[in-house]
Amino acid sequence: MNPTRSSLAAVAGLLLVAACSDGTGPGTSLALSFSTRLPAGAAAPSRAPSFGAAVTGADTLTDGTNTLIITKAEIVLREIELERQDVVDCDVEPEPAGCEEFETGPVLVDLPLGPGAVQQLAIEVEPGTYVEVEFEIHKVSKDDPEDAAFREAHPDFIEKSIRVQGTFNGQPFTYETDLNVEQEEDFAQPLVITETTTSANLTIRVGLATWFRALDGSLVNPATGNKGGQNEGLIKENIKQSIEAFEDHDHDGNED
Image 1 (tube, rainbow, N blue to C red):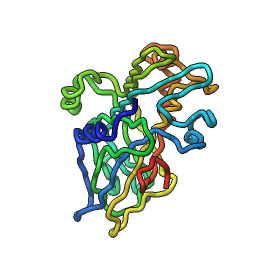
Image 2: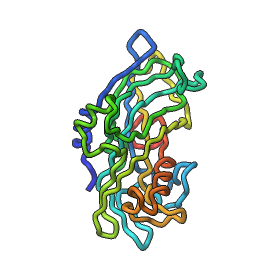
Image 3: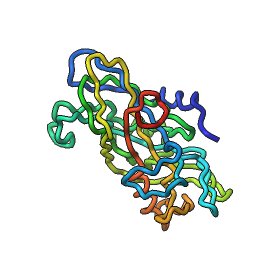
Image 4: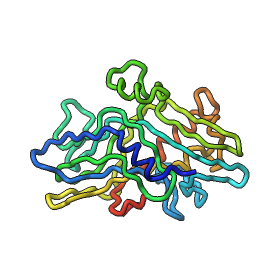
């Protein structure tokens, strides 16, 4: 039921990999990976509602009454940027030195449903101490020229940013949203890149297990979160609160 690593690698090969650096020499190779499972026994991210041990990040979830099986989850991101420790804010014009922007166009990330982290991008980063990653969960526009190539490759994502498929109590569902929001994720520990660092990995963990939950922790039918549905606002907020980022040397999807 989970996507294979080979299929994810094929998706990753289609992503644009671009690096914009303020430095002059070759930088450090930084892998950008994604994961969806929390460590065994871990709670949800501190900003998100906590559902105790029931939140495991698995693709099969149950609350004792309902069973949710997620078979595919895709998300569109753009304007991925790292912020140095000595930069107050990258969201100003002109953009200050020390803001490493390495992906501007929209990219489709096929979120892994199994354990560990799967690399989707690789970029060159200049030495420095980085404390935050910024990116936009992006609703694909109907006519913005910057989205033209993406629209041609993924016409079914026009005016959407996320799609999740699976079954809820045995009935197939497709959840789609036009959520369009900038995410700023502080690192629990700074990401330090030195002149001698040869490679590093940054993992963005998306807690799928928290997306389709009511405030009491019970599962809700993802289809009720579609446009105009009774749980549209609830699920959008859960998505925004489910994301965290950290250095992950061994690509196991857990913070080092």
